[in-house]
Length: 195
Image (cartoon, rainbow, N blue to C red; front, side):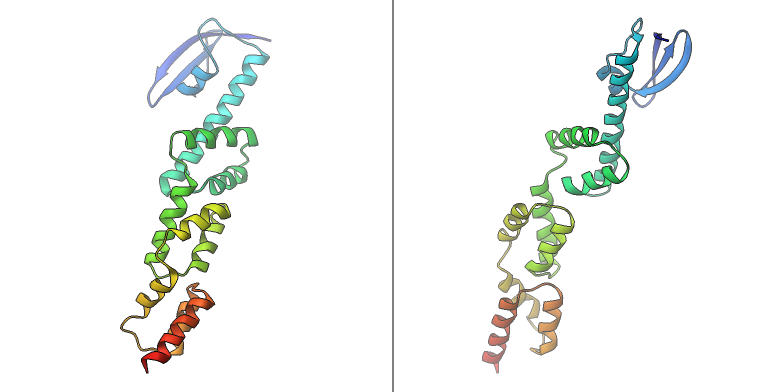
């Protein structure tokens, strides 16, 4: 049975109360009402109900992704995985993530560069940084570009050992923080030159 929209009442926080055949039906986000082209007098048939359901799924996916971004900057891959785990359809995920990218709120290059700089500042080597960005589901080209923009790893390692006693333990700590074998060998040879 097809029902008719008899009232649309604006509510707080961007919501609209929808009335069908004179009876309260649902409260929907205003954006969903607009995108589903709901209006007084429109019949809610199977086709318009499908459009409404699709718009609701899209709005829910966008809201979930936006909440995740409010906590911290995330990569597209991270958000996609979160939405997938929450049972959001592929189409709704793609549309929500596309909207966030178009708005500039979702940017893997920005995430990779920012995270790489932070980890380098905290004393991590390129291997650890590459691993961290990979866990964030950032593609390898973007990861490589972010690491190439950093100060050379060997310079970061030298700064990390400044003022410290030159012992094998120092090299072990750097290895544990993801510095490459080449960097560690370079440091070890400079240790030998210091004695």
